[in-house]
Image (cartoon, rainbow, N blue to C red):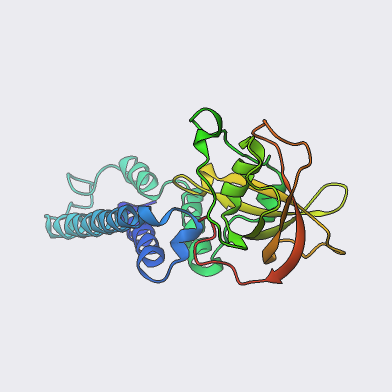
Length: 256
């Protein structure tokens, strides 16, 4: 791979990063919203490095052409017959280097979706124990009825709150459907700290429905907490007795 090609690849990578971070919100499929300024800065840096590389490579070519030519005997500029092919091979490099363009083309042309049920089925549910001891970690719930909660907050409170603050409370949760092994389904949500690579899975077993929705269908579920004995473990999966299930569109930020 020539120096010019490597520089053009940098420009292509940088343009791809700028496209997903400046045009629309597709970057939210990969990173948190707070990472957007860093994506823009990285894209600009890659484009600047690539353009600089192209300019330097073209300048070197023009300077080489302007130099006095070598004679037929293979003088100073022409090089020996052995040096020419070796230099050309170094310039060309392995053809497999072009595979570096595949991730860029995938993002530009295919637009991979956010992580969903495929990932959730292959990972354990996570309800991280609060850092503060006892029920002091759980402030009183608002008196709103029904109470809208994030799925992550619901799982943590259902698993670790010994006061039973969820007992009898109608809650509304939003997530996507994930098939459960042996039948049934989970309402699922993934959360990220930085990017999709560190995603944590939060699952709630939905009870009281006649059939399981299709995988990755986004739903709003209203119901009440069903104590199922799964408490005190970070991989515990709480349950919800569903009273109302409504199909919704995927949120702008699927990991929020």
